[in-house]
Image (cartoon, rainbow, N blue to C red):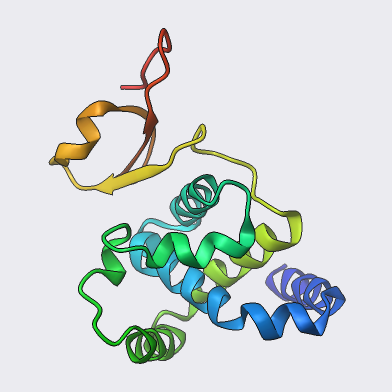
Length: 165
């Protein structure tokens, strides 16, 4: 089954214009690295949720997804990066070698997101998430939507709406 899905994915990628790859190659790698490092140990569903957060923050503009993940202090994996380009290259190379199954899932999710313009939103329009038992200060003003593994997904509160607990 895995070979069949890989063949389908390769076929779909082949349908994309070459120009799209030339312009978004680095962006795809950064998005994949973000998914693996933020949620790879939680599985495919959690990585899907993180991709939904990126999409929801990107306001349906796939060309802005790179800006979303690299914006200062937004995704833990990119915090404290001085030489962004070198760090991205190092991270991508390391992940491709050592986290092969998670990397493949992340690449597939990123490609599907770009092909379909966005993935089905399993997070109920979440724009934030955190991992762990301790709730960050910024989460108190937000509404909990869904928990996947140890990741708690959240979004802005809407008046009169019930929260997930």
